[in-house]
Image (cartoon, rainbow, N blue to C red):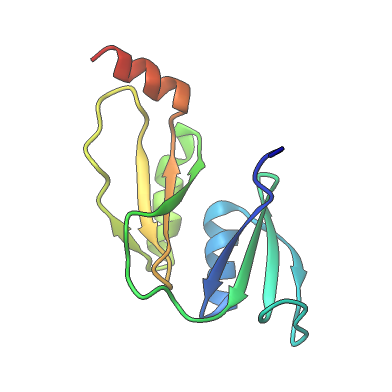
Length: 134
């Protein structure tokens, strides 16, 4: 039986660039770096983001950008600071979809390998309650 999400893995061309994104924007803590050793398919690093294990492995970038993404919860008070940190790293922001009031705000951005990330201030419960209002 499923107990939860074990980890997320992102294939990236440059481990250092992705580490900067994870640490400077998501507040990640690096817990492992394979260096030149490879126990898996390629060099890799492991991070913890709010207790969630995130792995990055060296490889080819995604061929195209899409709306597939992973979203991380942030408090409303952190919204402007997160936006500034994304801009400071020169990452491409994607305009958010139109929203109804009460479902939270989102920042969408791409890393250098075409992965999309979202920083979201709302919760599923808030969104469902808002949608039930019509």
